[in-house]
Amino acid sequence: MDTRTDAATSRPLRPDKKRAARKTEKLTKELLDPYTKRRPREQKVIWDDEETGLCVLISPGPKHKDEGTVTFRVCYYLRDDPGKPRYLKLGRYPDGTYTYTREGQAITIKCDAARASMKELRTAVLFIRCNAKDLGIDPRRPRLTGNFKQWVDRFIKEYAEPNQRSWSETKRILELYAVPDWQDRDIEQLEWKKDISPHLSKLATGKYRASNGKALGTPSVARSVRAHLVTLFNWYIDEYSSEKFRSPMVSTSKTKKWKVKARERNLDRDELRILWAACDQVGGPYPALVKTALLTGQRFRKVGQMQRRDLKERVTTMDGTVVRHVWDPTRPSDPENKQVGVVPLSKLARQVIESVPIIDADRGQDFVFTYNGRKPMKGWSKCKARLDRKMRALLAEEKGVDPATVEWKPWQARDLRRTTRTMLSRLVSKDIAEHCLAHVPPKIEGTYDRYDYLPEKRAAFERLATELDCIINPPRRSTRSRRSRAS
Image 1 (tube, rainbow, N blue to C red):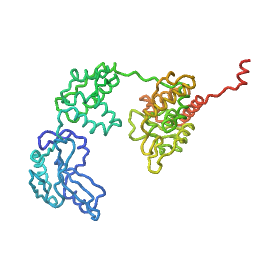
Image 2 (cartoon, one colour):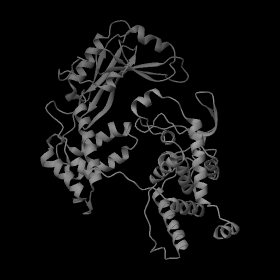
Image 3 (cartoon, rainbow, N blue to C red):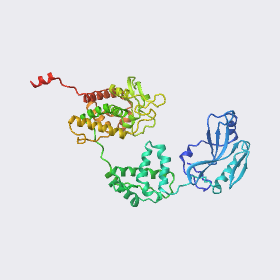
Image 4 (cartoon, rainbow, N blue to C red):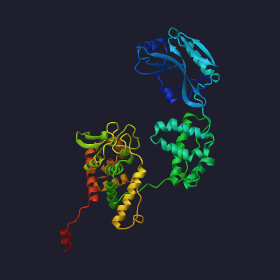
């Protein structure tokens, strides 16, 4: 446990994850001399193991020289920009003379670090940090004001953006539903019964008024806002809060009332036939994306990020079986709670993917469903609306009615995965269907069963493609068979 104290306050330093990850060593002549005699490959920083704010910056130096440069620096923070480290350059090693400015005057520290110990330099650094007020700097990580909006901004920057793929959604939710009401409030003065609970109740009943006067809110929004506030307060307590502060978020039975009913929508055979026909007539990458999502059963966003480099000609299973034509969508950044597996591609799925033109192959990143080759396609809502209009038109033409009056059941892109799983239940066993969608098996089974099921998934997806083909192109009965059956 870190028992060091802050030089300016004499208080124990709080455990700091970033500080724990620093490379700290005893700054001695034996450590620093080799860097002045040979050119290092890259720049790096070594922190002193005794004085917190002292470090040396080791750089390759000028290209025409064979030795590197070693620069002593002091780390500090500005009060009006907390959290961002600043560095005060003292001088180059082993010059022996290090300078800093105090009240407009240059103060020189004479310290022969090449011969003597670092005691004199550490004493000077301690003096700088203890007299930070005179220098206009603060050696500690100063606490922000209690302003709720400032803490939300810092939470997004320090926690959400580095750790969450959907950090932009977190930012949107907090800035839309929480910041406007509490932006001038002290974060440690917010209370559950007086502030947070009534606010969430407004959101759940749709009575919350945005800055433009529009009524917002649903039970699912209230539930989401509460979850983000819990994370925000937990982060604040873990990193910056005062010792007496406790999170105002409490367990409540309201969250059960706000829980949204699980979605049950899946497309029937007629809807699948109309959908496929509409995709053929609309054209472009989005209809091909819809078809591929239906044929693979994977999450729509994951399919939208498909790259051609992920399409493997052949892979070998754990038992040595060779499986041809697979898609490997796994990424190191995949969340732990959403398992991703290798997907064997049926012949129909390969035909759909091959029908998408390759865009900007030389400079792009080989995305399959893209407009410019460098990023996955965007504007899904507009493409979905265009596809819906075509489906309504085809359905109205088939029934001989006006498209405006045709009965229409809205569907979403995530319903395709549910539709695929429902079809697989009629074609293969439950276990194989679950593996096709890369669902996490039960705890004990998932721990001990490490088989990849690639051959079984190959057969399942081929059956799925055959079933879809029968739905899209239903076999026509011949006239002779109908007459014989009638007789």
